[in-house]
Length: 219
Image 1 (cartoon, rainbow, N blue to C red):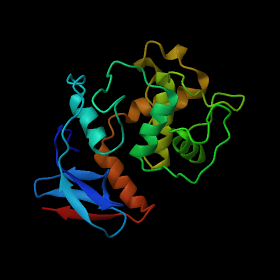
Image 2 (image 1 turned 120 degrees about the vertical axis):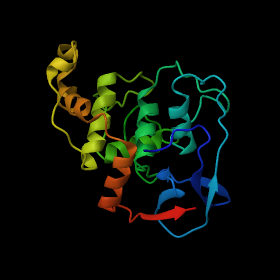
Image 3 (image 1 turned 30 degrees about the vertical axis):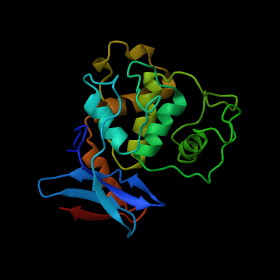
Image 4 (image 1 turned 180 degrees about the vertical axis):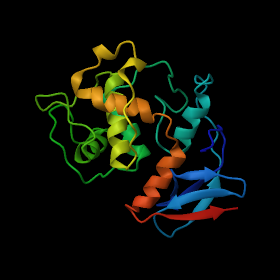
């Protein structure tokens, strides 16, 4: 399993004068196993945990994503763990997690301005058929994302990476009838596969060899 310790050491690539986290970096008994795309200069480093307002049950999970450059705080020292997440914020998380961000892509949603911090994330998600907007050429920027939409997005990405599961029974959720029709199939697939680990995602990505990743062990 991926370590979720707040100060777990990870592999970073030294590129362009800065350290770039290697997302698929896994501490093991013998060292750190990492998936890299090319030769380069790599270092082992532990980041300090910066969020004084996020020390509850979610701290280790926040730290694991922060250390990998997948999420940021609302400021350098505040995470705001009780805040709602917007559609563009969630899309950024998913796109970063699966390393799909392509700054060259374009998208023409009326409410997604070119130059906005989330522009390339929405464009990348749209290009990869992860999102389609809310209608009338609108993405829904600034809107709080619904749980059913989170499930639909996550399951779409899992299926694109070859991770599928049998559908869960509708009896699993008492409020199944309130799930929108467009999200029901994806939601029940996600409910069945929600135990999938990050380690499985790494193995699947490696098998696909989409960007010719390579593995190495840092001891």
